[in-house]
Image (cartoon, rainbow, N blue to C red; front, side):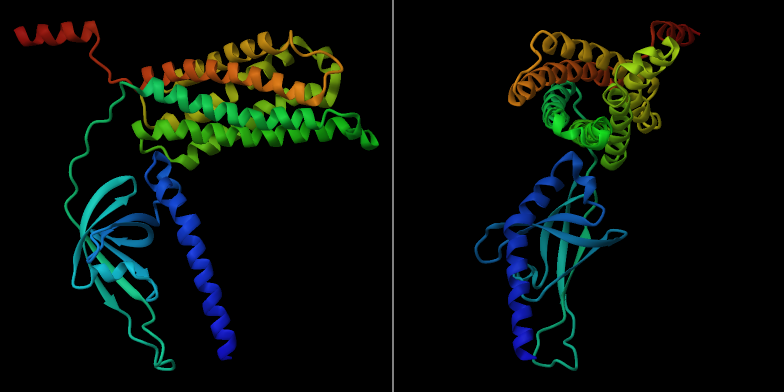
Length: 358
């Protein structure tokens, strides 16, 4: 039994060490970004000053909150909490907001059946100081931040369906005559990955201006819209030239669905936070229409029959970069305009002046 306990303790220490070295830095970084809401409902970034060394210790901790009091439970084998013995000031990144507080430490009593073991746990109680008023968000550089982030996100995301499409285009996928169905399904699944990466890139910038929009809601809307769009786009792969025989009204409806699906689903997230959010649907659809045109202009002259797979992928990625930069710049201009502070119209200003004269 003692051997098993020793092995368990050694394994726990190894896992704890790996978490400290590999997981905690990633979690700490994420908690400091606009995407913090993926974790920050239960995890905060705590900053403690070393009592002897004076060093700054930053670590993610799981917390429970009741009013202005946070409770954090730690293992006795860890050392960071010892800097809080007798009480000490701390800083936190709590749900995306910098907070200050005062922390105290209490030890849970040891279990009666294990008197030689240390206390069951360490309870750190943090009483938050009054929150300072938030500064107004700077939206002057919103377009540039959006354009950079969305370009990178769309390029990274589009590589997935580009590589997937080239990989499943070979004759080996014609197994049992279901090759086109397999190819179409693979492309749609790759499109879902693209949508998730694009949604995260957009949310990274958008949440800095609209913190009330959750990352999960925005990414979910983006992924769903991407799946719908890629499903429409995969129809020629699955059905071949038979799609061209469909009535023009049906083809027009499919084209409209392809262009508007993502914007419509994202609009459902935006509509409760900004005025006239319907403008995002128009702007997003128009941006994707222009971007798809750019992609076609770049890739069509370069793609030729019989090219090796790596060249097909390279051309697709080149077109994807051009498409990504186009859609990022256009949607960035749209979101900056939609989120810009509104000033009274000329008519409204005139009415205000007239009423003032009275």
